[in-house]
Amino acid sequence: MELKPAQAIEWVPAGTEHFTGEVRLGPLSHATPEGLNALAVHFAPGARTDWHTHGDGQVLYCVSGVGWVQKDDGETVTITPGDVVHSPPGERHWHGATPQSHMVHLSLTTGPPTEWFAEKVDDDEYHRHS
Ligand code: MN
Image (cartoon, rainbow, N blue to C red):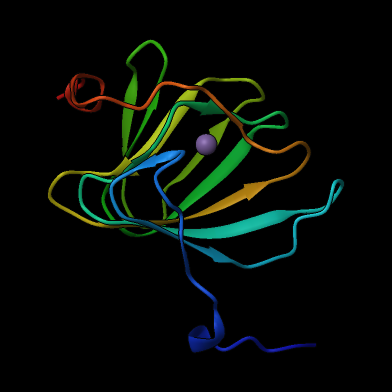
């Protein structure tokens, strides 16, 4: 076995191409075409992904803070530590932190890379459920 201590996780800024606000990615596994892609993702308050889909779906596991996951039709769930969200293949969605809290989730995917849409999640969409 191989221990990777917490301080050895190489957190990298997610950048602004597919995200709004301050987001950091902590890779937990190596992505391979067939293998598991496990990522820890840290969202600062108000930070979120752009609209996207996952070819094989996605499992999110909330580790810390409070977040939102929203579908195309506006349906939104609030997640807190221990909550799990499954997005089926091809379902357009975004996820991120609430305005008042950071949020950390694990993202578990297999299969093709995330398909990003050109649209950012604007403030109206971000707040439309509240
Ligand atoms: Mn997703």
